[in-house]
Amino acid sequence: MDTRITELLEEIKKAIDKAATTGDKYQFIDPVFDLTDELEQCETPFDAVRPILELIESSPNIDFGGPGPLGSFMEKFYHEGYEEELVASLKRKPTEYTIALMFRIIADKKNPNLSEYKHLLKTLDCTSEIDTFWLDEIAKL
Image (cartoon, rainbow, N blue to C red; front, side, top):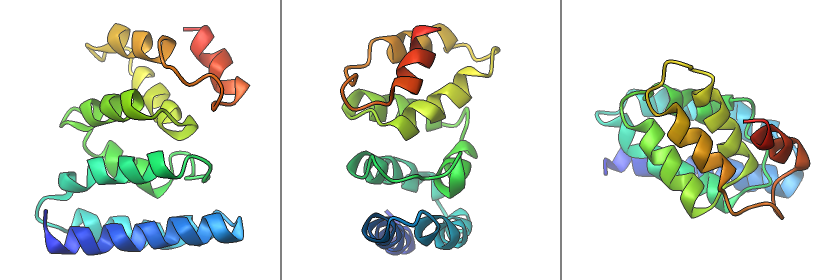
């Protein structure tokens, strides 16, 4: 992975930690918009998608925004590998944020994997950690 991507991911991690410590989501959101802008300028920005999802998995209680800087960055790779990385993340450790990101994907009724994605959400093993809002949304699928 590009050294600059690694440095930017470390800065994103610091912003997540600061938001977790202060309880202020803007300690994360504001600086990370600039960091994701920098990620986009890297030679292989897609290389950051899996590590970003792993950061999200390790900090499930952070309000990352809707979709916020990370979701906006990753969605630039829709139909270019993002969905596969999100599916892998949901299988590893589903979070409310990654569930919300998948709901954004299944809003595309023309997506050829729509039924697979709905099935994945319905079979997630996460009921104790996910807010009832998302559990209700999943039950409606």
